[in-house]
Image 1 (tube, rainbow, N blue to C red):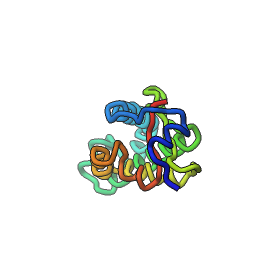
Image 2 (image 1 turned 135 degrees about the vertical axis):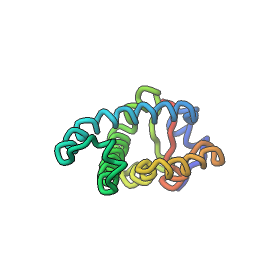
Image 3 (image 1 turned 60 degrees about the vertical axis):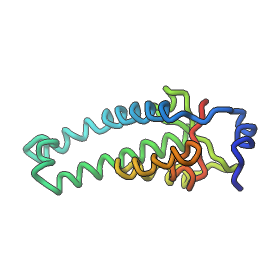
Image 4 (image 1 turned 90 degrees about the horizontal axis):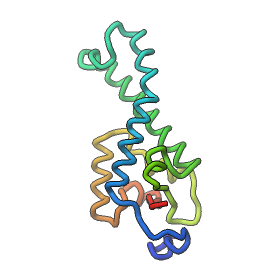
Length: 151
């Protein structure tokens, strides 16, 4: 059952859907956190490859795929696990935002669907374009019946 915006606000006691700019700031903060998480793995990759990970990426397609997959998996785990357990990531916490379900139940599949496009920047950009046409929801948020609200 999908709730109307006014019903959702009454149910949650909230009035504000998060603005694009606050969400963008939260995403940038989260991206920095993910880069901090990934930094130790960069040194591990250097053990397997004599060159620096970023300089080798231009020379070796296998390395590009390895690094891309590693970043994608860590990113998806980061967003999905934090949003499922705490309904917010570090960036959303700092920006005072939280993920809510527009249905009465909140499950891991919803969170996985809403975050699947974060494994690829082009997919995320396409997904985000829908925010400007559908009352502030990304396409995957519409599919997963979730929203990002001011806390």
